[in-house]
Length: 145
Image 1 (cartoon, rainbow, N blue to C red):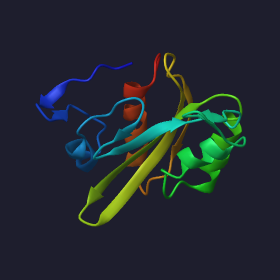
Image 2: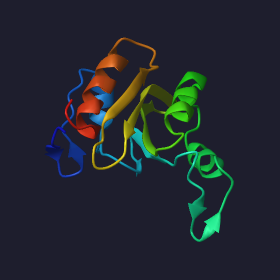
Image 3: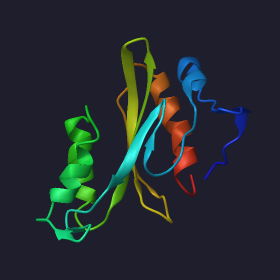
C-alpha cells in the first residue's frame, strides 16, 4: 500500500495527472470515508444477519449498507452483490466537484482488513483521465498493487 505524503497540513500529495482531481484530494484512505473526493464504506455480506443484538433476514444489512452509494451504476451493483454473498467488502467511489457539478471517475471494490485486496475496479468517468485517477487511488487502498 502506498504511504500518504502531505503536500500541506490538510492535503495529501496525489499525482494522477488529472489536475482538477489532484488539487481537490484531502485524503485517500481505506474503510469508511466521507471525503472531498472519496466516499467509501464496508458492505456486509448477504449472509450476515446480526447487528446490535438484532437479527435481520439475509441481505437486509447488505442492502442497508448499499443505500449509502447513490448513483452506483447497475453493473457495479451487480458485481458487489455477486462478491458479497458470504464475505464483506469495501466499496469506494472516487469523484470531484466543481461548483454544483459532480464528476464520478469510478468505483473500486476491495476485500476487508487486513488484506485490502483489489477485487475489481470500474472506470465510469467521462474522459480518459478518469483511468489515471482510479489507477493512482488503488495504490493507496490496496495491498500489493
